[in-house]
Image (cartoon, rainbow, N blue to C red; front, side, top):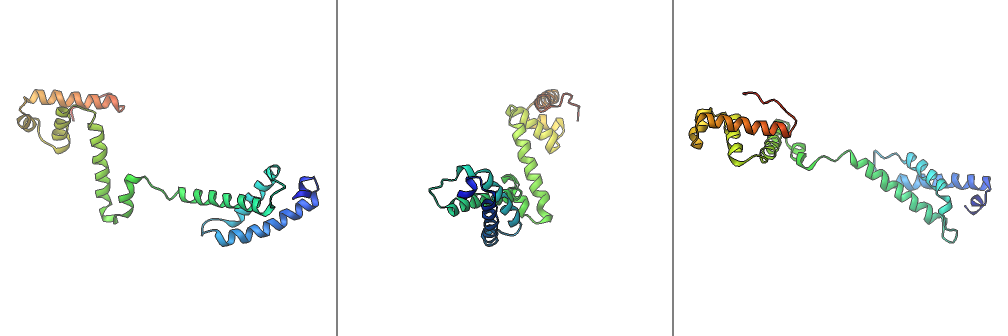
Length: 175
């Protein structure tokens, strides 16, 4: 390494060749399936080359080189795990049997609906839930809440219009 730092090409080439063999052994013992050891060898050699000016000549070269190798391995392991993660709220769907996954999706939809409805006053929320989700008629909802049918229709319409304005819809139909 010292000769390479002094600008001598041949000793530096030998160093990189020897280091590549040592790194192959290092990664072969530590890489789990799915992590390409040869890619890590090449990444490490590139890092050693590009960071050679940071090498402290008073310290052992192998400790410096293996520190770089360890960091490259840790980076590869992190990259490999990133695609295995799922949002926490979907964890139940990952472990539910296929015949029950629809229930998990329905539960997530219900949770999302409750978050949206939470922006409305309690009365509007209850009326929308009764008329649009549960399927009560406006007459049934009016009787349940002690209101006129017209008042139920107006409250449901205004609540849906408010949600439409907040979440991107502009026209609210009579459905």
